[in-house]
Amino acid sequence: MIRSLAELKAQAKELGPRRCVVAAAADPVTLQALSSAQKEGIAKGVLCGPADKISQAASKAGVSLDGFEIKDCPDEEAAIVAVEEVRASGDFLLKGHLPTSSFLGAVLDKEKGLRTGRVLSHIAILEPASLGRLLLVSDGGMNIAPDLVTKLDIINNAIEVAHSLGIEKPKVALLAAVEAVNPKMAETLAWAQITQMAARKQIAGALVDGPLALDLAVSEEAVKIKGVKSDVAGKADVLIVHDIAVGNIFAKGLIYLGGAKACGIVAGAARPVVMLSRADDAETKLNSIALGAVASVV
Amino acid sequence: MIRSLAELKAQAKELGPRRCVVAAAADPVTLQALSSAQKEGIAKGVLCGPADKISQAASKAGVSLDGFEIKDCPDEEAAIVAVEEVRASGDFLLKGHLPTSSFLGAVLDKEKGLRTGRVLSHIAILEPASLGRLLLVSDGGMNIAPDLVTKLDIINNAIEVAHSLGIEKPKVALLAAVEAVNPKMAETLAWAQITQMAARKQIAGALVDGPLALDLAVSEEAVKIKGVKSDVAGKADVLIVHDIAVGNIFAKGLIYLGGAKACGIVAGAARPVVMLSRADDAETKLNSIALGAVASVV
Image 1 (cartoon, rainbow over the protein chains, first blue to last red):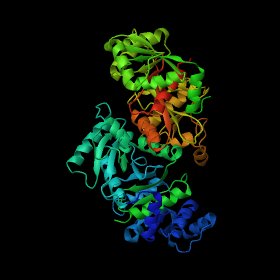
Image 2: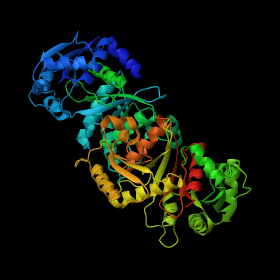
Image 3: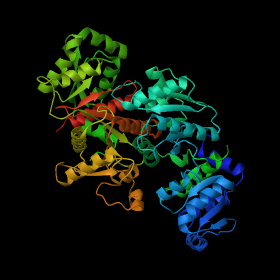
Image 4: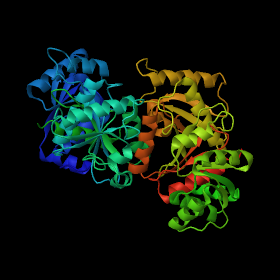
């Protein structure tokens, strides 16, 4: 079981280089991150886009293209070519320099895309100082205000990623401001429904409980004080939030104000999807690629 | 300007003991916290409730009642007596051992209560490690899903508390997952409206801007990378959230996973209201009483 980002990277190295297919690779930031991952033995880059532009971007980034494969194609076809390539013989997908909407359009194309029937969702992996384990948080990145069916997809996507980290039976906390089911708080009603679905074995491979306040999700001390009985409380591996604002503000809060390290991935497609942010530091970018590599092993 | 919880406590001491009126004081936990505050010269306790029960609770808590005033009254009148007392000659109110609903019922009583025309709102004060200033977060404790008018009350309450901390022109960030106004994200629409109200000088005594993502609110580095122009971005003193879940999960996240120290207060009544939680540690309780004392100076 992977309990830290250092262990995540070690595991990615151990798996040997996984084929990372980049859509629109003519981007210095992406090439830098991928080059580091390639040097670490985590990824082998397959670069889709115009070969001349990719060369220019590599010069600008100060990285060598030795050891990279290049699929020369026009900019506007880069996403489609990358999705085809990852379907055929790739392990995971990396978004380069193109609009998110065109990128996801290719991923979600009904005939040639990577659809699985589930929605795509973002999973942030946080390493808070002194917790001693990783926390998966979803979804603070893609689904604005998911309905019940989408919430279930989000949960199942997170459970799969947890499994790929070697967490056999992840403890999934459904977060709210309180632990009581309150008819005035819509999320607590959804969490009650989902907890009962889990009790009826409609969610596999995990222990699921909610609503739980954040302290009850992660602090065994708080569990004692409040006297809550739960297989999940105090020991959560996965934190599920009911809308993008909660997940986004919570995770960024821990990263920017709480000293947590982090990385992230988009799950729910037939292959893991890594979307780096320009605001991520080099370590976060490398960790996200390592996560893509680890999550690509089924 | 108070920039840390240590400075908050020092300021409370400097103000000399403020009259802290306790509703239903027969509670060991409350008496312990108040006794510490009294020893530190921060508060002078006025205990409302049955005198015999208060004595018993004090023995149980191992604290002396020397220096406390006692207003002997039946349990069911304790909240009303406390509100009367604080109106007449008290500085701030402390909730003892009684249901929150009866306590707030007395505070909000139309004739004898402490109404000001504003809603009550909870303000958490966080001291994140290494930020170098305090962050006020509201409202993660009282208003579940505030409408626009209530959001304005919440903002104005927080501005007043910031002023009491010596932050002359607090920078108020209206938080969302993104900085774009997105018609699919209701909170970003509300924040656009409120930012424009602030531009029209409908909010006094503060700089207000939103929507802002959390990184843009507190990280000057993120502001540079994203190129956002704002008087607030990167330097926020006050973080306003659009519903209780965001504020609650964000603040507890920083406390339980991010090493932040914290305290809290309820504002919007004619006097500050302190409501301690059993799960708070002794330091948090003392800091909350110090905050009540400081916020009671108008």
